[in-house]
Image (cartoon, rainbow, N blue to C red; front, side, top):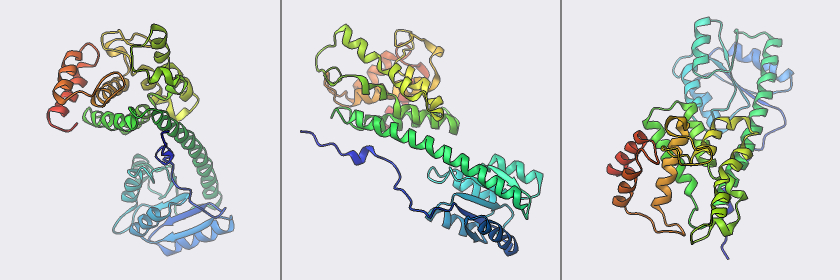
Length: 333
């Protein structure tokens, strides 16, 4: 009997045990501002911590992320703009809501560009401060619920592939190759995030496909082939209710379309196929041919290059195929 390592599938952050009060971190190089904030926030039942420098703020955030960050922009050393950039570029910390404390319109615009969620004049009005904090806490709670729903699906996708020794860790490799190609073609951060999610969930619809079909070593019957092809529509239906996965849905549905229009489920051709789906299609095919499967052995590097040359402009986007061939030639895959 095969023993599944479920810890590999449950890639969810360890819960942080917090007091029931939301925790607010304030950073400002003027002690009197921190004193005002402490008085206001403690009176309203929040847990409060104040620091005087950007360096201290980053250290505290890294060790124990707060529920809300109140951030001054003009500080010596690491200023508020750098703090914003560093936490927004960190996947683990990027969700923290940030209220910028400033009175300058120019600074407000720049702070929004760098990822601030809201701003207040300094020192802040009590009612305005509490209203902004409560609003962002509600938004954060909603986002965390979405992330939890996403994580359940990501874990389910990993468990699905663990049903079969031939496909274990296939999803992780498809994500890695897809993102490598996505960065080469210059996708935006949002597009890369959609690509990551879609690549991770591209086969989740196989949860509805029986093992005797998925693991069959011989040729599939037409009926079995039809069942297999249904996984893209099933996967789209599973993920559709989650608003944060909207950008991943075209990938899940269309990663088996072909450049020449002979793919499924909709027979799209060439540029009708969503661009991110084209990336995952070629990454998925690369991984499938690079590892043993029940129906054939893995291909050598030379055989892989030959297959992609033959499929360029037929099965796969010719430009993306050239990128993949270049990565193979350079030994980066």
